Length: 326
Image (cartoon, rainbow, N blue to C red; front, side, top):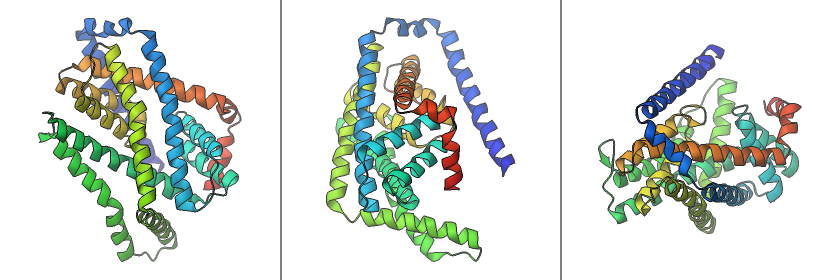
């Protein structure tokens, strides 16, 4: 198992190095395009940071509603915000430990069961991906943007992926209720996964809840789309609505589906390719990704340190929580 884990880590970082070499090579050949970054007004940078912090607040509020509906337990917004932010902070230094830390802290402070936390977190991610893909497909279709992804029109591509995303828990529900295992450990894991899927499907039967989190999902569009618009504006390329949504979906998918650690290199190449497709240029896409990534890290690290992140890392208190959860 350790060999497989080490091989995975090695392959991920090898891919990071190759992608970063590509980016460096590109700017080595197009040196003049790199200096665009020197003309950025600091007001734009400040605006992106404020919007990022605002995004954290709404995102936590939305997660708070989901956790309370799934668990039936009153979850303190501040406790969730602190645990969620420290978890995200910790994940930057010790991958996956942050998510475990968040679950353990919510168990301690709000009596939130691990299964309920896992269900809420998975539902949060799943619903977020589905909603964003659906909205993106609708906007691209209505604006009639001529852009293809893997030779398929972007709106059709996003509709197809959103449909696959939506049916996933229903498909899992059927599979999990068909098969069982004789092995005790495998059956225990099977039972836990089945319980999580059942909880997710249960909350889908609550229309008022779904409307509320959908509206909050739309509200989250504002700070994130504003950040994307501002960073491209700072680089001299104000975006149209459809192009803006393309970049939004790519960044959201990058948050949820990691090919490399933090999708380092992958996100930059993806935004560079998308920027070229919408007629802006590879350099601007890569630079926009780098700027957004650096500012996101700054916001997260400052936020994490203000909530006690340094003490958490220095004393390795997270290690106790990882041990408890296992």
